[in-house]
Image 1 (cartoon, rainbow, N blue to C red):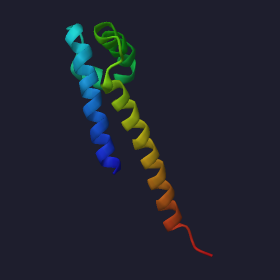
Image 2 (tube, one colour):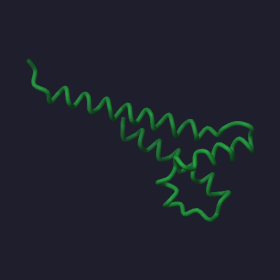
Image 3 (cartoon, rainbow, N blue to C red):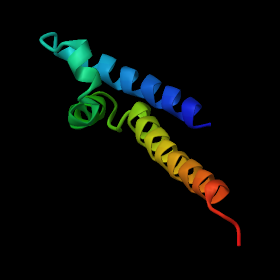
Length: 87
């Protein structure tokens, strides 16, 4: 489950960065991938200017990131409980 959420998050980050890079040709895509949080404000502004709303990829990115972090926390909790000695 955590892996799938990571793949979904990666997909949304690529969509956001593709949209931002369409308007700014000076950006290196490899560098953008590691700076997706910095580009979110620009993505919101671009999509809001075009459609009057924030693009769906913004919400997909943040939702998948939060769910992935929750899944990782849950997995660590479950693993630590299975390893802990039972009294």
